[in-house]
Length: 188
Image (cartoon, rainbow, N blue to C red; front, side):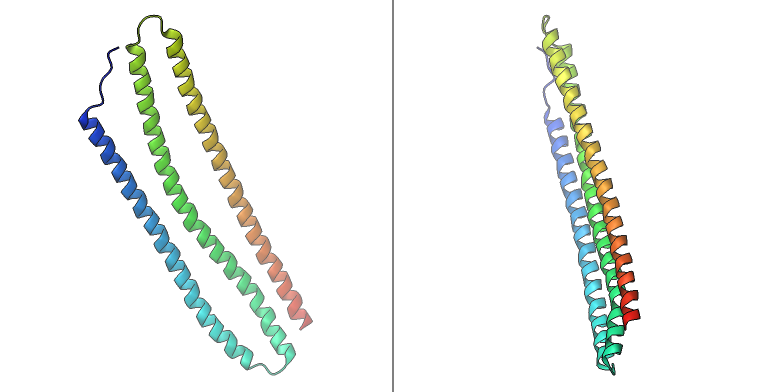
């Protein structure tokens, strides 16, 4: 069997590509962490400012009804802010996940090409009488590729459903809080 050996240049190229991918993904991970830290610092700063304003407003109320109205007025913005924070957090995580998925897809496609090239090379150099074994190997490679593609499609669909559910739940929570705030204002 006459196969082309894996040369030192091919090995170095593969190692270089792996290192570049690793550093690229590490950079993307740090960018996501930076975005997350920035978001949390912004939320903390805003929360501190709003807590000071709320405390000042609470100390200036004259009776229980005014305090209840103040509390009712704070419900809706708090829910909207929580939903907005959750959306920002989801966007950061989804962006990072998309980058990692993209890199995995590129690596998987490259690996599939290499395996198919190896199989094709083996087929060309296979001795007579091994046609059934070659067909079996080709069938196994095709089945593995199909299984990967099916799993990838299912994961993508699951992510889309999860995103739709997240959006629906956030919108429902904000709507429910708006209704509760209106009811509380009427009661006050």
